[in-house]
Image 1 (cartoon, rainbow, N blue to C red):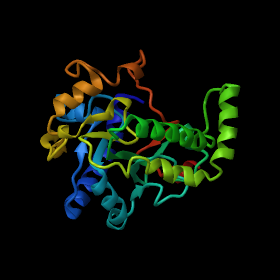
Image 2: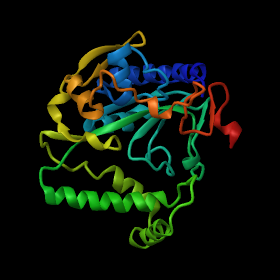
Image 3: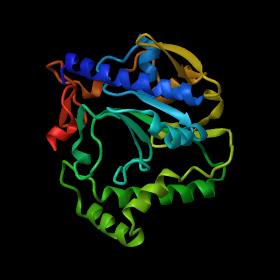
Image 4: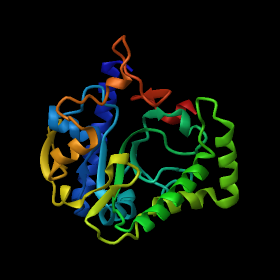
Length: 276
């Protein structure tokens, strides 16, 4: 995508963020901007140049209320997507989509789901203190991931051993939909531990201090006031290292000034339905 095309998509995502914040305020729920979106808010008070998404996270109790009550508060073209609203949605976190647009990813072609432009909404769960319990969760998570990935379309030819693993996972975990639900709830029962995980997020977000979030801090983002982790510098340092100079888009940039995105088809003016 060109820079102008990314900016056009960002405008759709900004509209989704406004709707998300409006519903959070209506339901009195807490959220935090995270990942590259937070880095953009800190460095530019806007999207990081060429960033192709917005990421927010919510404490589990707020996230669950958001999923249960939020769906009825969004009207077309906005659609709150999770395993609760679409049976074939395979991810352990939610998305808010614009149904009048398209962001069709090759890996999702086998799923009967909404594929409009989106923002990601992650739950923040407690991370277990017990190493034994953590290892048991990690084993189940890998099993569920293998089972769920059996229906994902891969661009590259997969090794034979991975095909055997996926075939075997069907025997161990026959229900594909059951695997989705179980993976989404893996950390739900963990009691307060002082450490948290952004479920479905980055590897470095596993076991980070709960105190980094708390009530949050206010930052500017494209003329919006957004909530961020209260210790957002510590968070950014954990995720990106030298966040003052890190460029999350660098590895996706082409020599002609365009950027690679994870979708084959992107449209800000036509619905994903037109392309199916």
